[in-house]
Image 1 (tube, rainbow, N blue to C red):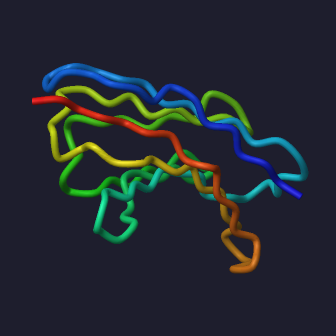
Image 2: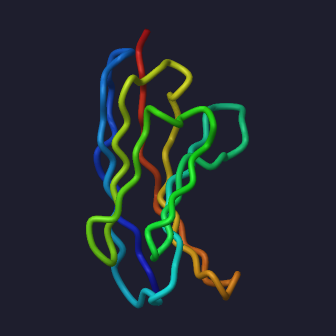
Length: 117
């Protein structure tokens, strides 16, 4: 069983910054992709950024150049969010999944990010 513990959400003014962290506890396979997704009210959950075990990163076009994902250690990732916009307001979810086993797919409980204009 894997548990994902998120931290770092909150309220910030437009143009400000926040840093989200996600720590995985439990049996984590060696080869995984960890990342962040977000869901705004009335919208579908969407990818924000992911990072592979080998360090390869992937970003949504809407956050490129403003957000940066990093792997702090084998089980912890962070998302540095700069130049925040009101449209970044959403619940942010940490995700961990296996490259080879689609059933190995875990979500955190979510953390609220609110950007005031």
